[in-house]
Image (cartoon, helix red, strand yellow):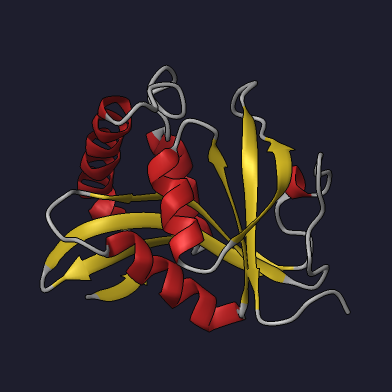
Length: 169
């Protein structure tokens, strides 16, 4: 597999992957994270592509996964305030959002996370409390639970995870 920037020509395929992911999440006990709002909206994916923050995971010539990734200092406003815990590293970080696969290839989530971590050495991710699949993926890939954050999309609190090559400076 390889990772590349998503292109506007990938929109249809990326939206198919997100549709598959919504059904997968619902079938695995997580109907509220993306389902009720038909998340993510196509306009957001188009903006992510234009901003250079949308990526696809390729298996040969086929797009099999999609995700958002960017990095910097305090790049995710939802992560400024964290409840019932704290971040372990206050330096610049990368953030992954909207990670999804099409179900045809095993290991897409791990591959995308490893790719992003290799680029920055410090990742933060949040997930819905019902998303046991993502929580397990994060824990298996060395992430530590840090607390609770709140996102603008809905009123469900999110579990915040972090993986860093260094601790607090």
